[in-house]
Structure formats: structure tokens, C-alpha cells
Length: 582
Image 1 (cartoon, rainbow, N blue to C red):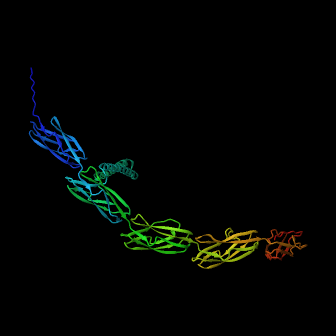
Image 2: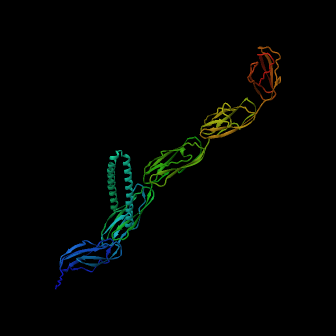
Image 3: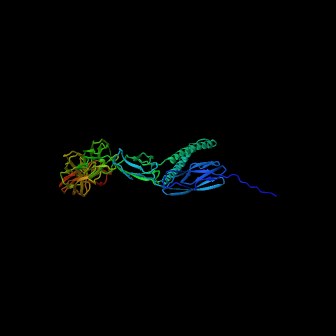
């Protein structure tokens, strides 16, 4: 038979409290500590392993206890919210595991800001002013504080993730760009090209990887402290001892004449939420004004030059840097400002000369804006007036040629006077008349310059080539001003005089000898009150005979007669009948 023998060795037995209570005096974000004594009451050494979950933690989670020995275990409580927490501490040794209850409650520390809205004194652009805000710690624990850019930790995390995503996209784009650039620059042979390209791509990938890894590390390590282009806070972080206070200076340096606002968030150990501080300030731009805002120049003649003066005064406490803003209107190019930009010292002024020479007619109201650097509001200088044409006039209300005979020259005289105070460059014409040499009207002189209060005698010649009634106008154009600014009527009636021939229809020479000239007289009787002009047309066929008048052209006075002697020379025998057209 057999007898079973059973025996057991020594066993470790740990003595520790069942509950660790941190009480109700802990502060949010502040690490509280409790130390407990763990003793090995057994007869065997053992290893121990401690595990706790947040917001509780163990400083040294592992240890070793000989039989009969003891050790101290530090348990920490770091609450993240102002509420009561309860968790378990798992203590494992040998084959056994024990559970310790951990309890604690947290409250917000008495940390406060002197005010949540800081209005900084109005500040001139380019200068700096300060406002102060006080942080007070009325708790019994030291408080680490910092001014943050975001209102919560979650928003900081989201911002970091967004930046990381942006960095990934930039790294991908730059890698593709570098690879494409290498492919375009590669001119190696097919066999060596792949190896060279692979080495280059590896170098580029490693270089870009290190570059963006460093940037990503900087993003992750960025504490996201408050930063702004206009406002700054000093100090940005620090430690506040119990029952003390610290004064932070908020600097305001405006760049333009605007209302600025920014929000900084105070992150303090002992406070669950970040306290916002709204900082506001008004930037004061340079102050300047003209000695007058508007000038009414009244009536000004077109093409006349005018000069005005105006002073730009600095009425602020900083220098003024001014510049004329571009303007594209009808009359604005006719104004010239000297100078059109510059700087005015404090208490100083700048004299600006304005030259104006209009080239258009009509009313104008031009408003010129002058930008002041650092100011959102421009100063204005306006000019109003009326650009008028020079005044000139004829000494007659019309030109009446009356009834004129066809083809005769008729002339009339008149005077053009410049009654304005500026010279004018004129041109005279009869609209509708044909160009030379087919024109019927001729104006002498047809153009020129008339000085102020001067006159010019004008001759208008008229040769009618059409039997009709004329009702046209003599107009005046001014160079650079306009067309047909002044005109007077030109009236005429062209009539054809009544002329009869004697003998009528035929000149009878009777019998004539070959190659011997014979003469006959042709009488032209003008029975009208208009002069007549005649012209004998050249003979076309001279083979059988030819004629030759003693006058090929001429005139017949009104109610008078005129004799033309026609010589006939025959070249062949026989009866002759030669047409002659007058």
C-alpha cells in the first residue's frame, strides 16, 4: 500500500489598508500624495505588482518584500475635473491578488482674474501702450499658469491634428514635384538611369522625411501659448505661490486705425476650465486735414491753365505719410498735384500746388482721396466748376449771296471775333460741301489762332455748279474743344441766265474755197439780269473742215450782247455741215 504525503511551504502574506481616501481638499490638476505601508507578515519573500487607473497613479509600481519586511508605496491623485473619483488599486503578489479602494474628491482652486475684459488705452499707429491684468491665487497650493491660444485642450489637439494633416499633404506634393524634376533632368542611359534615379529618389525621400519630421516634432512640442500680431502678454507663463498675485502686462501695438480684439485663455493648475480674457484696443491713425475741403473754381475756359494752392496740415501726434490715390474719371486726368506724396512731421504742414487745364466741356465735381498710412479713413479734396468753350462771334447773322449765276465767283466778307480771355484755335468749314477741287465754297482763311479780344476778317467764296437753292451753314470748330460750336446760315439761289443766238440754229457761209478761211459772226444776246458764261467746245472731227472761234470762252453781261467771230476752213469739196456746241 502507499501512504500519500502532502506538505506546503511558506506563504507570503501582505498587510495593507483596504481603503485609501484622499479626502475633499485636492485641487484640480494638482498632484496629491498618500503614502501607505505594506508589510509582509508571511514566512516567504514575494514580488509585488501595483496597478491603478487614472486619475490615480503609483510612483513605483513594482517591488520585492522579504519575509517580515515592509515598504512604503506612494499613491498619487491628479484630478482633471472638479468632482468625486473612486477607483481600484490592484495589488498582485505570488498567486494572490488584492484590491484596494482609492477615493478622492477635487475642487477648483481659488484662482481668479482681476477682470475678463481689458480695454487698452487708444493708441496711435506705430506706438505702443499697455494694460494690466492681475492673476490672484487664494488657494493653499502653488499654481502653474500659462496664457493659451485655445479655450480647451481638445481644441489644441484638433489644431495639432489639422497641422499634421497639412504637413502630410505638403510633403506628398513636394516629393512628387522633386521626382518629376529629377525625371526631366535625367539624361543617363537606360541601364544606368534606373540606378541613378533610384539613388536620387532615395536621397530626396530621406531629406524630405527628415525635414517634415522635424517640423512635425516642432508642432507636437508647441505649447500653443497665446500669440497675436497686435497684442502680446508678459509673462506668458509662470508659477503663482499660495495667497499671492502676479500682474501681467498686455501690450497693444496697432498697425492701422482700426478696432482690434483678441482673446487669451488663462490655463491654471487647479482650474478645470480656462478663463478667457478679451483684450480690446483702438488704433488711432494719423490726423491730417486740408486748409479747405472744396474749391469752387466757377467757369473756366477749356484749354486754359489754372493754378491753385492748398495746405495739408498734420493735426495729430505722429507724423503723417500721405499719398494721392488714383482716380479715373472724366476730368481727373486734367488735375496735377505737386507733390502727390510725402511725409509731414508732427505739427507741420505741406503746401500742395494744383495745376488744372481742362480739355473737355461741361460741369465737373472731382473728389480726390488722399490715403494716410495707418489710417482707414482718407482725407478728401474736391474741386467743382464748369468748363466752358471760348466765346467768339461773327459780325453777321447770315451770309446771303442772293441769286447768283451758274459758274460765277461770288464773295462775301465777315469778321470772327474772340471775346474770351484765352486764345482759341479755330477751323472754318461748310458741312456738306465736297472736297477740293469739286468744292463750291472756299473759306479764306480756313483756320488759325485767335488771341484774346482779337478779330479775323474772313472771306467766303462761292462758285455754284448746280442750279438749285442753297441753304447751308458756315461752322466753326475749335481744336481740342468740339465740332461746329458756332455756325451761321449761308443762303443762295443759283439760276441759269436766258441767252439766245443770232443767227439762230445755223451759220451759213455759202460757197467757200478749199483751204481758204471764211468768217461769220455769231451774236449772243443775254436777256436776263444775270451774267452769262459761255464756252465753245472743241471740234471732234476735222477731216472735212474745221472751225475756230476768236473766243473759246467768255462772258455776256446782263441785258447785253456779245459777238463771236467763227472762221471756217474747208478741206474737201462738197456740201459741208459741221456741228458747233456753245
